Image (cartoon, rainbow, N blue to C red; front, side):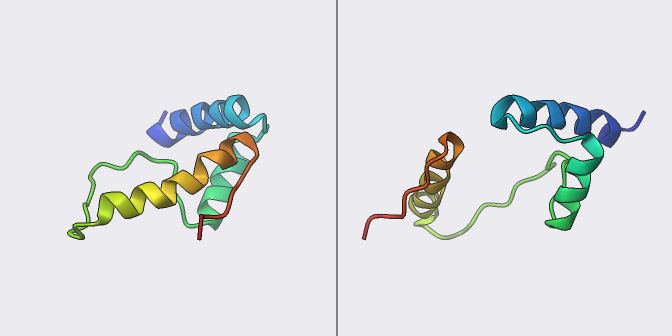
Length: 77
């Protein structure tokens, strides 16, 4: 059995657990592919040379944390 065949069922179970959303592994694969995403693990990382990267990333990521709990707040002006 190849790694994607193992990874998709696990990812499907995690989506169901975290989001209370039931998707078959094949449906999940198709949705990810349609969005241009992959379920496979990233093997390397690239870091931005921008000295303000961490500050900017924290601001962006803070927008997603409330969405996990059903709330999305616009950034403060």
